[in-house]
Length: 169
Image 1 (cartoon, one colour):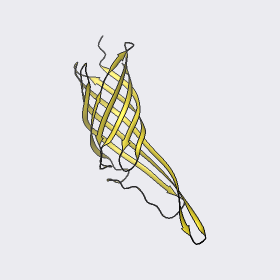
Image 2 (tube, one colour):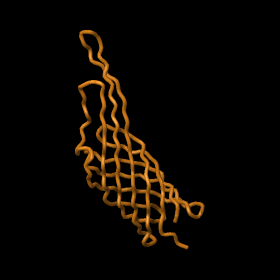
Image 3 (cartoon, helix red, strand yellow):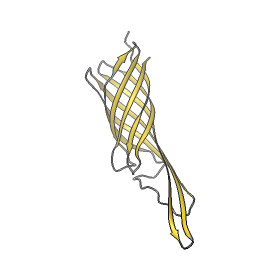
């Protein structure tokens, strides 16, 4: 029996732009095969970054300490065409992105990181991934992958590496 649909979860690391560095990401993926080599892959991805810092300013009465806290959530929903072979899998297509953020400080001054688009603005980008499916236990697939996507929020592309565990429905 050929199983045409797969549902999976993944975790990995992604490198966002805007000075946010390497951050964890989680997500869900659904894949529907149309032929032996072609499928449609839908996903929901969440990457997050959280920073706390302390700085000070020298005043006439001593040092004034400043505490800041930044939180960023980066959501993306790719719709990808996937070519599957016994050697490597290649996926490409559009992705819908949304970024939210919060900056808190105990002082009136603040320097918020600069992004290309304002927060809470949807934008369309593109994603490209390469992976290798490892089939085991009849209904499970483990698929490590590396990918790159272009988002309207960052000047540079977002790089990621993930491990997906899929279940054949």
